[in-house]
Image (cartoon, rainbow, N blue to C red; front, side):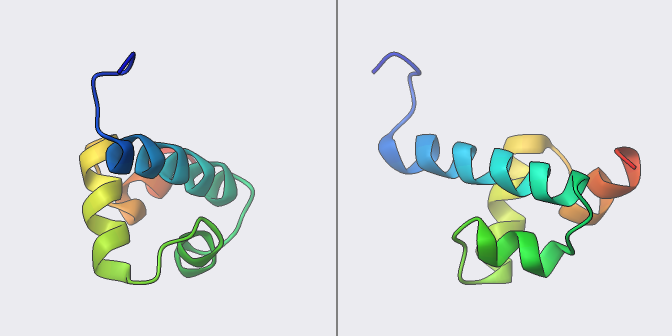
Length: 64
């Protein structure tokens, strides 16, 4: 309730934040996707875009 989001979005926000940390540490997009708990690339890409406003590859290029 305090964030104004449902449980699924709250959890996915945390998973994307974890994936971003892994990408900063040099892991590949696929490694970060799997390690952060996503099973499909399409769901990962959709949630990553929703949370960050960029695709994983765009975000990675901007944060290298």
